[in-house]
Amino acid sequence: MILLEDGETVHNAFFDRKFKEEERMKQNKFPPGWDEKRVRRVLANYEHQTEEEAVAEDESAYEQEGQSMVEIPYELVPRVRKLVAQYHLQKVD
Image (cartoon, rainbow, N blue to C red; front, side, top):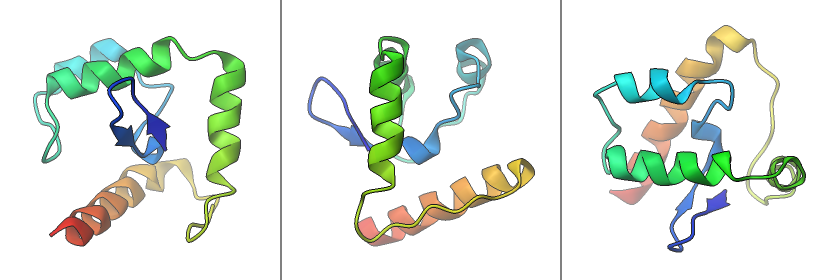
């Protein structure tokens, strides 16, 4: 999880740090509850994050109770992200 300056939390599993901002902004579709402003806030968080902060964030993911880390083939990442997003949407409803 990342904590944005305004107190909002976002799960970092939804982001690929190798994805270029220009490519991200070309996409006009946002998940429910997301808009360009929110995406820009999250991007700003990652752009200003030091390497040490990024490592600490990644390591903290392994310590969260009720979650598990699994290594999967890269080509399955989009499907897994979609599945996780659907799971979180169902929990909210």
